[in-house]
Structure formats: C-alpha cells, structure tokens
Image (cartoon, rainbow, N blue to C red):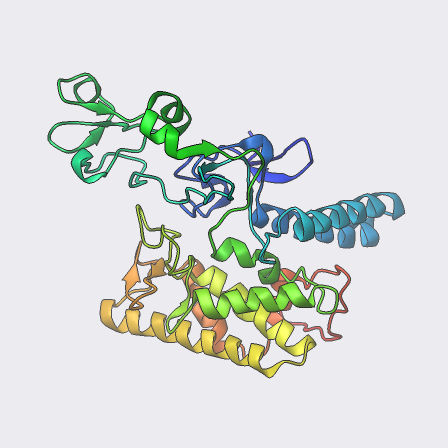
Length: 363
C-alpha cells in the first residue's frame, strides 16, 4: 500500500498513523494527534515533499517531455503550495499539521484546550503502569492492560486476571467513563497540531517559501527555530516546552538529527542571503558549529558516530556506528558555501529566483 494518501480535499497525509507512531513519515514517534482522524488530516512534511516532487517533475518534463505534462505538474505544485499556505497554517501564523477532530476540554462559553498529552506513556509495547498514580497503558497499542504487578501487556493473563485493568480507547472512554466524559469532548471541527518541532519548519527546510510573498511566515518560522528548537548542540526535533518532549520512546521528541540539521543550515544560509539578513546567516553558522562540535565530542568520548544526539547535553544516542545521515557532519566540515543544499533541494522554482551559480562537481 502507498505510504501516503490524500483525503477528500486532496490533502496529503501519511497513512497507517496510530496514536503513538507515524512510521510512514520516517519521524516515527513525532507527535501528531492523540486521536487518528485520517479523512480530515493534512501533514505539513508530506505536503512539503510533494511540492518538491511536483517541482522536480516540472523540471524533468519541461526538459525531456513537453508542454502538456509540464502544465499538469505546475498545477499540482501550485495547488499543494496553496494548501500549505492556507490549510496548514495555524492561528499563530506557523505551519502546523491539520490533525482532524481531537479531544478538547469542556469549558462553558470558552474554547476548550486540546488534550495534547495522553494519559499514558506511548511506548508502543509493554511498560510499567500505576493506576493509583495515573500512569496508564496505551489503549491503542498491543499492550492495553495493566496487571496488578504494574506492567502493561496484551496477554490473557494481563487482560482477564483479577485486578487487571484494560484501558479503553479515548472515544469509548468518553461514553463509558462518566468522569472523563464530563471533562472532555471531541472538537466539532478539525484542529491544528499544538506541537512545534521539525514538522513545523519543513517548508523552510526544503526552500519552498518565496522571500517576498512569504516573508512574514519565513520570519515566524525562523523565530520558532531560534526560540523553540535551537540548542548549543544543534537543532532539536521537538520544542522543550512541549508536554511530550523527551517522553515515551524519545526518538523524534527532542533528539538532534544530522539530516534535518543539514537542511536547516542550508535553508537559513539561503534565506539569509536572498533576504540580505545577516542575523539569519549567523544562526546558520552557529547551528553548523554546534552540530559539528557535538559529533566531534561524541566521537572523542565514544570512538564512534551516532544516530542522533540528546538536546540537553549533546550526548551520543541511538545506534552506533552510524555513518548514515550523521556523516553530513563531513559535508558541513568541508563545504563553506551552500552549493550542496542548492543541489540537494534544488531551490525549487516556486516563485523564486535561483542564484545564478552552478557547480560542475557532484557531491
């Protein structure tokens, strides 16, 4: 099956998402919505990839095929861009997933706050639980039952024994748990994700924003990078103020990843240059130095290159030796200019003027 789909509004969304994971996106446990509402979801990262894909098809068709297919892909590119700029921008002017109808707190005459942190530790597998302390098992996982000994599981011994508790999916809980039902309801309309992280900045990472028409959202996105995601060790995957920061599996919930740092550094350099803003360029330089030092210090300490790094102390984390995307540190170490980003992303021809500079050597 395709890892992505489009809803009735032709809005790109990853398929197969659960409350705990969105594996098709590659950002496994990056938080989206507590409930899955596939027909009404739009995902910023997938929409961004599809704009880049459509732009690539425009370039290929205009060179090798002809006018008609080129026009089709131009139309797709413009449609997807329009969705990004409208449907996937929240009330704060930031890019944000549309996550469908979600659970909100009931408030008389006021807009209820979104339940962004579920009452369980999303591990996707067995873990500890404590009903007395409000630590539940994930009802959407294969381990929804808490045993008297304090462990989550899905076996008959876990779910049918005396004293065992099976936690209900939230949709059912609102109907069967009177206390929960009195406090929460499901929103009448789709809502935007409250989470701020890598997904928030994807259109900037891929160079999809016009420095003139999109100036305000570019500055808003860069402000998010500076205030929410920037660390001395590189760019964190989730804001430190997020209720799910470093929670659960803690894979894409704060960790620093080389592939995204590479894209961010290139994007900041690009927009700093075309917008003639030295502060943006300095942010790129600071991020580059921080990430490179993190990888270098980790190698000195552990004698290896790691999959990712912690945002609090820059400690090596994940798999090792890992010379996949973490090897981008060598690209950053050897390339002082930005031609690698321009070649990788292609600076899409989405209402932008690409710098008149091309290089003959390939990465």
